Length: 129
Image 1 (spheres, rainbow, N blue to C red):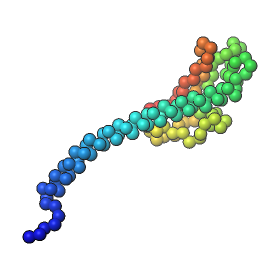
Image 2 (tube, rainbow, N blue to C red; image 1 turned 90 degrees about the horizontal axis):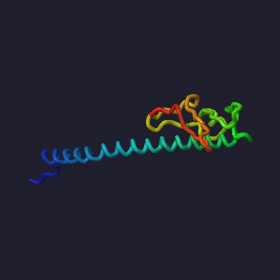
Image 3 (cartoon, rainbow, N blue to C red; image 1 turned 45 degrees about the vertical axis):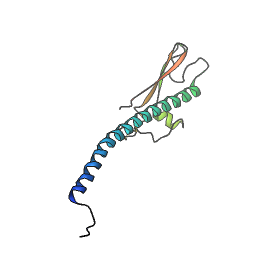
């Protein structure tokens, strides 16, 4: 007899082999996506800091104070919200957390600007992992 097709045993062997390959590939793919999202989040934080630096450069007065953040002691610390950066055109309006898929809240994400030593230090707050 001339039979075409696979026997049940052959079909089960193919399924077992494909399952084993999937068990090796899927965890690596998930790990790679997670690492990629972490790097993208770090890049977005760096972009927000860069936008805040550009904002501060535009706002620093002759005494070295960032406008609207100084007291009478000269160089000082301050903060700028993501909304201010977006409204000023320093950064895009549609930023979202790649790890959660949620858009950043422009009113709670802010960059803290501190004058330390002879330089300004920028740190981003309000972004949750």
